[in-house]
Every structure is written in structure tokens, then in C-alpha cells.
Amino acid sequence: MLALSPVIPVVVVDDADHAVPLAQALLRGGVRVIELTLRTPAALAAIENVAREVPDIVIGAGTVTAPEHAEQAAKAGAAFLVTPGTTERVLDAADATGLPYLPGAATVSEVMRLAERGLSALKFFPAEAAGGVDYLKSIGGPIPHVRFCPTGGITPQTAPNYLKLPNVGCVGGSWLAPKDALQAGDWDRIETLAREASQLG
Ligand SMILES: O=C(O)C(=O)C[C@H](O)[C@H](O)COP(=O)(O)O
Image: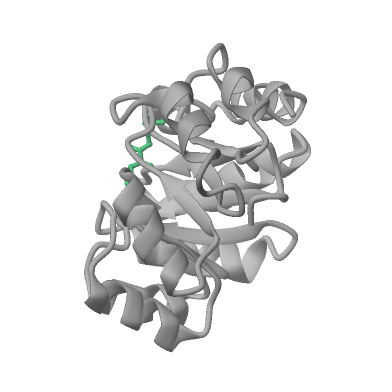
């Protein structure tokens, strides 16, 4: 997952009908991955729509915070799962789907626990609030084999600082799909944001 794009767009969809034109705009801009968060009632239908109609984009389900979310997302057609943090039950449920997933961690101990389970691609969340670039750089000393997708508070201006780190594969960000652009159906703007983001790596 970390190698698909320098930026994984993290999206909150209020209207499941927005998901397909959004995914198409991201693809036109050169971004071939999308994370639809399970934060709204429209999310699962949105994942279904994208999985069915935009097969060229890799569709992930974000905000997997309860065991049942994992199975629901897999059933809807998600190709990967993202969790903001982890519990044993959420990890077991994610394992049970057979899908790849990016589990969230914010501390060294969480990273070590996930590495013990054989997980070496993690989401670092909430990136800016949890210590940002300096924290990730420090983790890379004792735990160099774990790679991260930092997410939370990252902007197009700060993303390059993360992407320079050897233990960062990509960043996550919601700036690629601003709420007002979704509401207005401004797919050209999203395409432009995607094009800029795809060149950050
Ligand atoms: O919903 C989840 O599962 C999360 O973990 C949180 C999101 O990844 C961040 O809210 C995105 O962060 P921003 O780019 O700062 O908006």
C-alpha cells in the first residue's frame, strides 16, 4: 500500500454518489489509491460503488475502529483496511478478512507490539500531534525495518519533510478531497490537487 502513491487521499463522503466521480478525478490526476473513511452512513455504499465502477483505483476503508467494520468493509469490496489505532480484537478481525491492512500506531511501544505480530507497514497517527517528522526519525534508529504512512495534520507543504525519511513510504491526507469541492462536484479541482500530490514523491 505504501508504494502506490506518495499521498493516500483520506476522504469523508457524505453522499455515496460522489465517490465514483471523485475516484475518477483522482485517477486522472495520477493518484491510484483512495481511502474512504467509515465515518459516515454513506461510506460502505461509497466503497461498493468505487469497487464496482472504478476498478483501476485501489480502494481502502479507513477508520476501522471496531471488529465488525473490518468484515463490513471487506464485504463492500475494500482492497485494504486502515485503522487509526489498534486493539487486539480489531487486529484479529482485520486478519480474518485476509486483506492487507495498515494498523495505526502513535508510540514506540505500539510500533513494537505490531512488529511482534509481523506487521511492518503502519499508519503513524495522529502524525503532527504525536511528534511529527522528528518522532518518526527517532523511531527509525532502533526500529529501522518498520515503514510508515504518517497521517493527521499533514499538508502539501509539510508532506515532503515526511517523504524524505527512509522509514516513510507515503503520507495520508484529507486535503486532496476538500468538503466544499465534493459538495460542489468540482472534480477538476480534485484532479489538480491529485496531480500536485502525485508529484510530491
Ligand atoms: O479517520 C481515520 O481513520 C483517521 O485515522 C483519521 C484520518 O486519517 C485523519 O483525520 C486525516 O487527517 P487530516 O489529513 O489531518 O484530515
